[in-house]
Length: 208
Image (cartoon, rainbow, N blue to C red):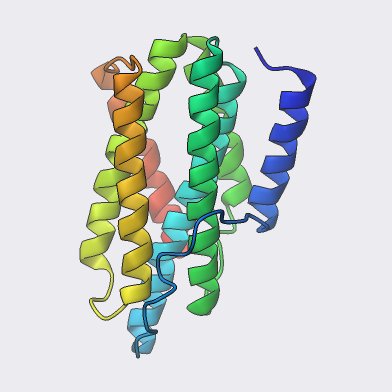
């Protein structure tokens, strides 16, 4: 279970996530892609999609932090910690892209962080295999969501597309690792509830 040090580190990560001071340990995938000449409509649409992706990464930080705090096995806890660090790269990349597009992060991010943390706590309470299974299903849905965004982003927006493609590769790897570590298949009602929550987040973040 979580120690005082774990709680302090988690609180620090929460502040960095919500204050917009996340740091990337890996190079931004868009670094070598030229900025496209987008129409105002294309730029607004790309910004809204990247805002959704940024909010998804805010949720990921909350989920992984909560799941790590309640993991029983230290090896499982370390898996969550490693994945969380990689997800922080995504957070930084999407935030950088939003700034380039002249857009902003979602106004509802603090609420989504709190809700996702509560969900992560609940997942952790059911034991490590269910905890890992939650990661498997989450990453499966996120991978689908990012594939959809690859289709919806303007074709000329190579910078946003490079970021989303790299994120999708990471999410697929996280899901596979959780499955190989013993993650179980979640019951259909839980999977449906997760999809409904993700849909609500997507619609909200796109506009606000």
